[in-house]
Length: 123
Image 1: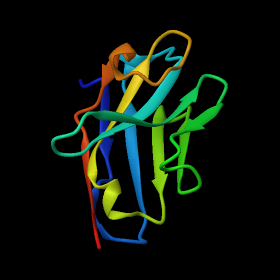
Image 2: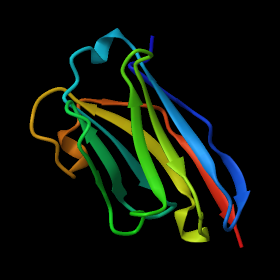
Image 3: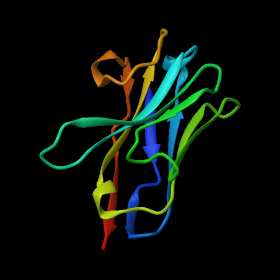
Image 4: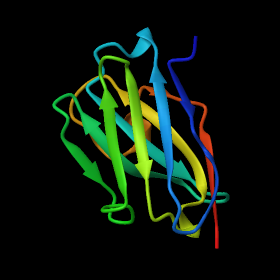
């Protein structure tokens, strides 16, 4: 069983919306921080948004006001609601879990990763 499993990616025109989901398994019980990262072809893995154990959220400047990160503790699911999508949002999106405090922006500090969900935004 994969620790994290994303779904909900797809193709959309600029200005459209998508919602990504990330289902967490028992491996991630007790997670302190969950986050979304993205990686465009030929580029590094960039932090997008995060939510901690106390539901405090933080966003990258590039997505603030357009994306919303949420978690459903009962269903052990993390979401990324994306609106007003732009072509530059095109990337593979990954959810990640960090077991201990604090949350931070560096991908290498996260303990578990999903397999990724492709988001493609056309102009």
